[in-house]
Image 1 (cartoon, helix red, strand yellow):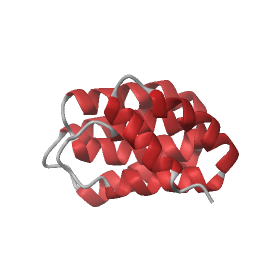
Image 2 (cartoon, helix red, strand yellow; image 1 turned 90 degrees about the vertical axis):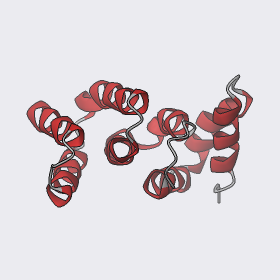
Image 3 (cartoon, one colour; image 1 turned 180 degrees about the vertical axis):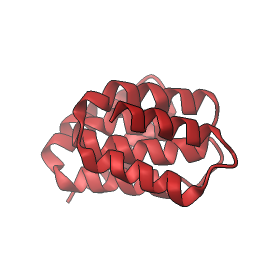
Length: 133
């Protein structure tokens, strides 16, 4: 699975990579459920943010959500708080789905973030909490 993640990150860096193939590969990695990939996924997501790559943030965020479940919420909220000028529809959907899938865990993970020193993070956590059932 590590080889697939390496291939995915290479494709995310390649402006000429086939979009459908990239999405299919991200879906395959997500479907694997391989929790051993979580640290690397988080590192790649951080790199995407540093490089201001909104496309990579969306795809990696989706894979991280699929594998990490609600425990990925703090990472996804922090990633979402970075303004890259995109609409974040995919990432927002992933966050809402995780919040609604496990409301109790989501509340416990998000509530502390509403008091984060970074106001963008606090605002995104507050936004996510609005989707609790």
